Length: 194
Image (tube, rainbow, N blue to C red):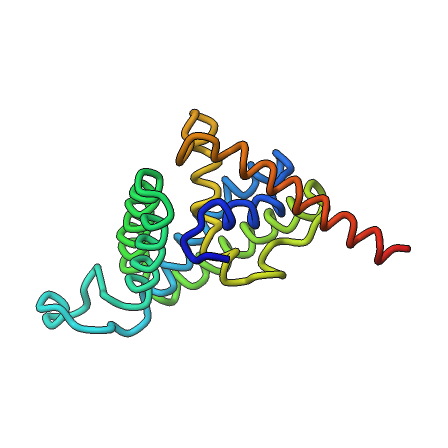
C-alpha cells in the first residue's frame, strides 16, 4: 500500500466502516480519543526546551503530544491538500486545547478524565462494530493504519456529506474498492464457516 495513496487508505478503512450507524458512532468518538490521548501526552518530557519552558512549566510543551500532532498533520496534508489542511488545523487545535486542559487539571485529575473518556469512546466504537457493522475493527488487522487514518476518515466522511471530494470520481472509485474488499471478506468468512 502506497504511504500517501488516499484511495487505498480510505478503501481499507471504509471496508470496516460501511454501516451508517457505525460511521456516525466513529464520527462522535474518534476525535475525542485523539484529544484525550494528547492530554495524556502533555505529561511526557519535552523533546527540546524552548526559552519559555526554561522559566518553569509551560502550557505548550514540545513533547510526544506535539510530535504525534505534527506527524498526523503532515501525513494528512500529504494525502489531500484541502481536507488535509483542515485536518492539520484540527490536530493542532486538539493539541493546544488538550494541553491547556491537562495543564489546568494537573496529572492526578487529567489521567482520570482521559481514562473515563477513552473507556467511553472505545466502548461506543466496539458496540458500533459488534452491533451495527458486525465486523471486527480495522485496528485488529492494521493497528498503525487504523489509528493514523481514523481521524482523517471521519473528517472526509463529514466533508463528503457537504459534497467534498478530493478529486472527481474519488467516491465512486473508493466505493467500488470498498465493495470488493467487503465481498472478499465475506467470502473468506463463508469459507471458514463451511
